[in-house]
Image 1: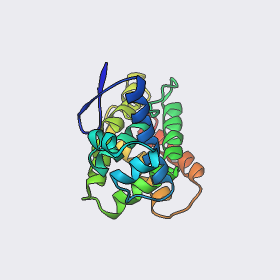
Image 2: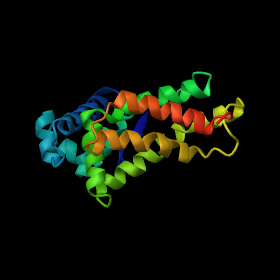
Image 3: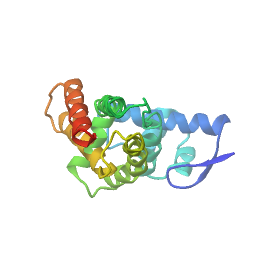
Image 4: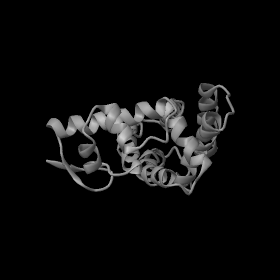
Length: 196
């Protein structure tokens, strides 16, 4: 079975291809963790100990490499389903707070904050749209259980969860991230719950 890379080319899943893909993604993530966001395709090939031709074939640009890394980086994000609105909001907020606190995410968000028109910033927005849509499914589940107001906008809920977490982790407001996550979760739960 073949899978698409970030630029749409087909790469065979499993075997050596999958090892190379994961190696490249982890190498890019490691470089970002260390604050290197200006790497080239050749830099990644050298650090990953892979032939340049192999890396260039599948990821011809830095943006393609970051796209592959983003896919690996966010692969574990899922919409929680605890059975309650309060539990879902709390778990999602904690999950996002943990992710946004990682050096990789902080580096990527700093790039986005510094230049919203850059190719990497635009890639991040495109990458996150389907993820945000999936994560916002907690709102519809809450509505289905009768715990969330019928007029609650899932996109607004996600913006209100993500915004404060990004401010704390990206813009240097080094508040207590865990405390911020708890406060955001409590506020969202009240604001959009049927009793809010």
